[in-house]
Length: 231
Image 1 (spheres, rainbow, N blue to C red):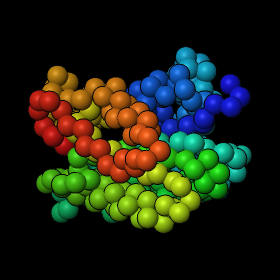
Image 2: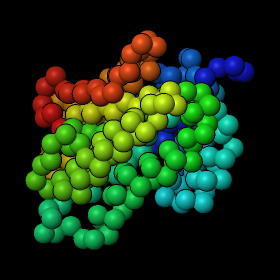
Image 3: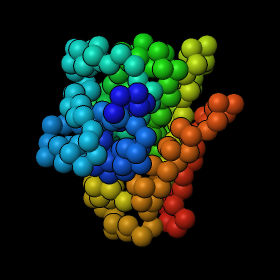
């Protein structure tokens, strides 16, 4: 619908990304990032969104896709990976892949979309993790990447304040998603969804940050499960 604000959500085909998309759909035109898949096509059909199946680690593909976006009101960085293992065990490839997706791709996409964000005096939301505030044994690569993501958000907020951009970091605890199932398999633990956040709770936090008044800049939100582990 012409005239409506535009939001781009990476990792938008399922889990937290899909929940955020559903929460924003009533007020925003959506670009949903993700690998080309049935899931991405389904949610785009459900919400009337435009699929944005760009490989985020391919700098040329990102540059070409971003060049077509002239104005962007909201950019939600939700895509990410989690590779668990001790510092003694985790291979170099796991460290590189984790930082490539969780940090470098975020920085590159943001840089390419800055002209469109500046034009709208937009808002960047980075979905971080409880591990972006405190690390845990076996979580070295993931936690380090999330600490780096926190630093990236803080830096961007300072650098772009004069252009009217807002930058919010959301730190959720464990969430009931397929990614969490994979994490619990890597940990060798039981999957206990009743102890985790539902994706919609994280989506509500994003909506709250975006809905703050012109006089307010919500810089950080911590969302913890009411029961169970905090990270």
